Length: 325
Image (cartoon, rainbow, N blue to C red; front, side, top):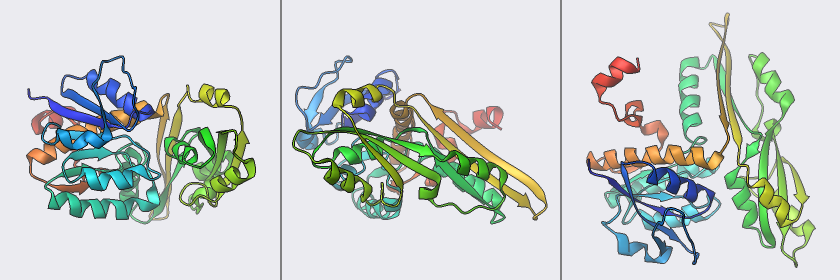
């Protein structure tokens, strides 16, 4: 069996999780890990390269994992990477996703490349289930999603990009009373900021000012603006202790009445001991899907909503009909 040659851009929590999963599977060959940082080491003896040397690996890597932050890095990096590489990312800024994917689709098709974007658990698996649930509902009801309590990697990374921040972690916390209402009601209309609180723990650099940093957090579009956000300033040791546990949760609830008569509930719950490792697991499956789409000459940018369910499994159709129906 021909191995899929892969590379990883970024070596934070997500990049390290992808590395560990990839090296454990016979389907893959990890060619290199790319980073802007120097002096990196791996217990798996992986080969490291500076990101600026990525072009030296054209035609040597089948699929790249973009495991950098969604706040700014992915949007910039992806436009360059797609010129020479197929890749999968877990871009998670929901409000930017439409324009991001559509613009990448043009570039991917022009360069005969395949991109699988927003491929994590949300956006990702929960996007698929929201679409499935709402398709079944057929406007008779609605699905509603909750996240947490857990560590949001994207929001934590966004805080760390603020000038004066040394380290930070952010917890997304669903409001218990709203969650309870959605399990009982058959008509609800809560906004994202009504459903969740955002709790931040921030370690500052010596010259940073608390009020300025807090204001930057609270007014950050697409992340904190409009939310009930609590900012706690702590020392870096405290943040590092919190970062040792990267758990998260997700819920989808769909309450509706068929023909306005028969009460029906669809519900999905996800509990993760490690947010980065589960996201990495989804992305690794995504790399196999990208490789398949390349072999089928189906170039362009895709999300989970574009992928047939059978592409997630290695079995052929006969086996799927036998074991999954």
